Amino acid sequence: MISIFWPLITLVAITGFIWILMYVRRITEIARNNIDPQSLATSELARSKLKDVSAADNFSNLLETPVLFYAICLSLFVTHEVTQPQLFLAWIYVALRALHSLVHVTYNNVVHRWAVYVLSTICLFVMWVLFALSLLGRHIS
Image (cartoon, rainbow, N blue to C red):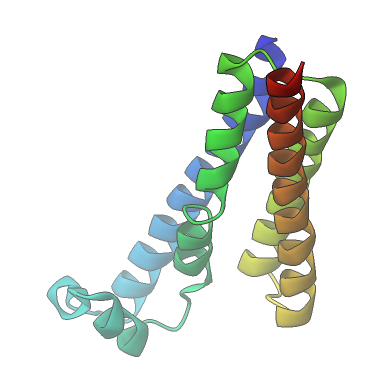
């Protein structure tokens, strides 16, 4: 069921949008404050010189647990285990990650961001548990 690729593609699009936002904000801040780009050679230096790092932080977040999302989507497809519940959970995960990004790059309330992160991660782990159970069911049959 190739429909599992649409949530995956959507999350890649969100990641791409955040990447663009990160560089727009970073280049704008560098130009506005006349910061020497070489003075940002490491993430530690960048944090000490730049005020707005929320998009960069969010971009990093989109390359952490989402790796497990990409892996489960591909695993579901390869093993022909894409089900309606899995597809539903995939879309919920992507929606929660989009909400997490929105919170992170706008008003950045840590409690709200954390709550959405926890919900998305639970959703992701439920996908993995369901996948494991489906494989186990195949093995037992």
